[in-house]
Amino acid sequence: MRIGTRQFVLRKAALYAVVINALQIAAMAALALYILVDDMNTALSGVLGDLLVLLLAAVVIWGAAVDIREALAAMKMTVKLHGLDETVTQMTDLNHALRAQRHDFLNHLQVVYSLIEMGEHEEANHYIEQVYGDIQAVSKSLKTACAPVNALLRAKTAEAERRNVRMDTVISAAWKDLPLPAWEMCRVLSNLIDNAMDALEGRAGARVTVTLAEDVKGYSFRVENNGPAIPADKQSAIFEAGFSGKGEGRGMGLYIARETLRAAGGDLTVQSDDAATAFSGFVPRNKPAPAAPKEK
Image (cartoon, rainbow, N blue to C red; front, side):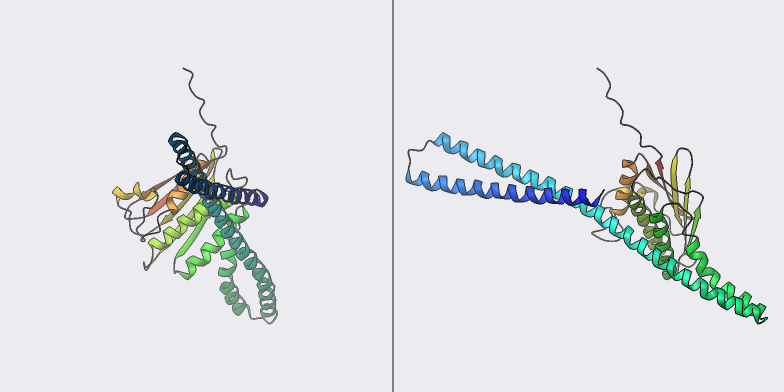
């Protein structure tokens, strides 16, 4: 969604709120005036009064309904803006990492060249082994044609390292021309990777594997961890809105992830046992057209 469109939607919601609340205030003022006049002039018809009250009540109810509708629209817009903000942050981090790597690479090249020129071949080999890991970490995150996904994988790889979790990425697809906004796909992957790392908290040998693939039908991914199994009787409930084992105010991540994929014609499933827990998602290249209504 373009920035201009978002601003228009938010302005429309604000305008609706102002107009509706003004009508409600005017309605209540008219009701108060009617009561005051009725007290002073008993000649007013009781039927007219009832009709006026019903009209004012209808205005208030209509205003409240529109307020609720616009509030829900504003909430959805806030969620989208939050997702876009996360994507921008991740891409900024990736840009900084790449610029730092380019600078460091030149310095490393000068050091290796000097060591070789001095005949210190063993020391040069040891130096290369030390810096190889850092270079490889960034390189592994640049295998797709989708910059936001690359940024996300880079950010999550760094986070996994801080949390003592080994994160492997297996990428066999470019993921070009995704059928849904890249920031929405990033939000899905981010929720799944975060959940996978949370499940490994304090676990020795913690490992998360993120696999991205595609075929002629569409795009697929798999986020797997070697944490404890999800009980079989809860594997369906974890996708329900509000379900969480992390306390109140949580439990929307998996629900939003699955609904995002389903809106694009895909789905999200889980497989879990004592060996591993894996969330697998799929999005078709072209969103299926809605079924035509059957003729009576």
